[in-house]
Image (cartoon, rainbow over all chains, first blue to last red; front, side, top):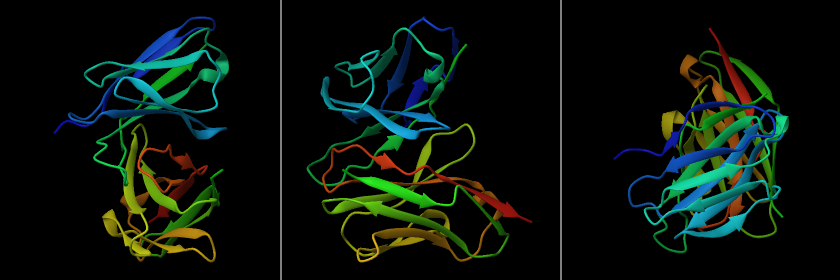
Length: 115
Length: 114
C-alpha cells in the first residue's frame, strides 16, 4: 500500500506570493492533518480535516487555509507569503476506525523556501 | 493544555553505548504518548506509542520507553546504539482520544560516534 504522498517536495517562492501544497493520504484514510516544522518553533499543528470538514485548527493566522476533497486528498494554501513561512510542511493521514487511538502516518513533507 | 519537554537538544553516544533520550509531559487528562524519528529529508516515523495499556512499551529498531505517571516522564532507551540510529527524535503527546492533534517536543538530535 502506498504511503502518504506530498507534492511538490520542494518549492521556492517570493514574499507576497501564495502557494498551494498537496497531500494524498494512504488509501482508505479519511483524516488528514497538517504540521509546520521550523528550526525555531519546531513542529506545530496547523489543521485537520475529516470527511471534507475542518475538525481541528491550530493557532496560525488566516493566511493559512486548507481543504479536503471527497477522495480525502487535501490541499493547504498560504497567501501573502512571509519569510517566516519558510518551513517543512508535513501531512499526516489516519484511518479513523473508532474513538480510540488512530495512528497518524506522515508523508515526506514539502520544503517551502520564501525569498 | 498539553506540552512536552525534551531535555537536551543534542545527545552524542558511542556506538554500542546506551541511548537515553528524555521526555517529560504535561497533560490535564490521561495522555497518549509517542516517540517519532526523523531522518534527513524525510517525514516522521513512529517508533513507539503509549495508549494506556502496558507502561513499558517496546517499539521498532530495539527502542523502548516507560510511562511513569508519578514522574510525568516517557524516556526513550536503547541498550546499544548503532550508527543507523543517528537522527532527530521527537516526543509527542495527545489527549486520550483518537482525533486530537499531536503536540511535539522540540526534538533531540542523536549522534552516534564510531
